[in-house]
Length: 375
Image (cartoon, rainbow, N blue to C red; front, side, top):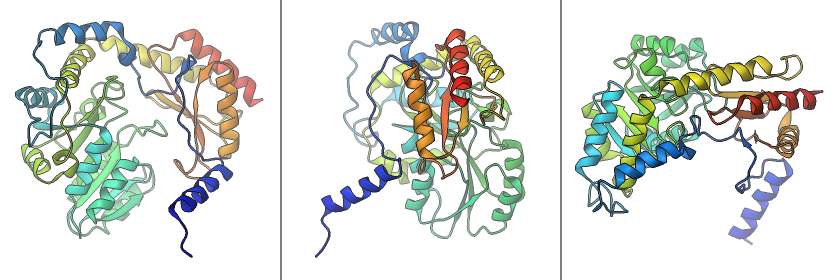
């Protein structure tokens, strides 16, 4: 007798429950936010909200929805101008907007590589890149995290056109890619470097590529608006040729309803707000330094010391990670457990995200509770 779909789902969920990796949707809470990606607090900024409201009032006839994909009824002159404007900020030739960072990565890696080509990705690359590669039927190789020696070994194994995929700031660990070393190897082996800037944009200037002045050595970049910009959506930056190619072959672009005008305008306003307030990033860096200076010593609690807004505390297994997380939430701090299989077994951790809206007192209190729990 064949197993029913319901029985199959129940069995898999029971396995997740048994190993402590079951996922549940969390309700909104009033805890101190140390878990969201709203690094600069723009999603809750009254100032930015008012700027967007004032700008929208200039377009009383705007539609609430896009009405279709951009290849049908959803395109607008404003969308095209915004793409050029954002590309100019990043010193790129052009850009193409997507509804999410996930869609942007899936679009890139499902349409660019072909069967017989090779994509080499850092072992900690985001799931959206992996899903895109699977759809492309290209060969996928992974190299040890930030391990240039292993990357070179994999580059020697490439067939067809070769792409290398990295995150400039890794979303689960918060550390930085060695973009200079990786770019040098890509040039040596004629590989095309693609950088996901989701967690660097707005935290480290307009991204690590811009900060290192590597715009001409990177084949493509993904900039997302749902983290430091506090909004929604993403853009792929690259050449005019790449943009034309994605318009014709990237299924997540072709078959998705376009972003609506209110979102496009909000992105434009938020970009200008970000660029006119460099002190926001400076203040975030100061808070990051404060946290790192007061975390328990490494021999007491194994933690990172990253330059961006994400710090991690590594624990042993899903059960201990969940226990620490719940204890911190009971003390008023919203810090979530990152469990396997999201990260490999043995790499479970608490992920601490810093924000402009975290006060110095909140940061110091968090460090105090971490010291208590670690004892």
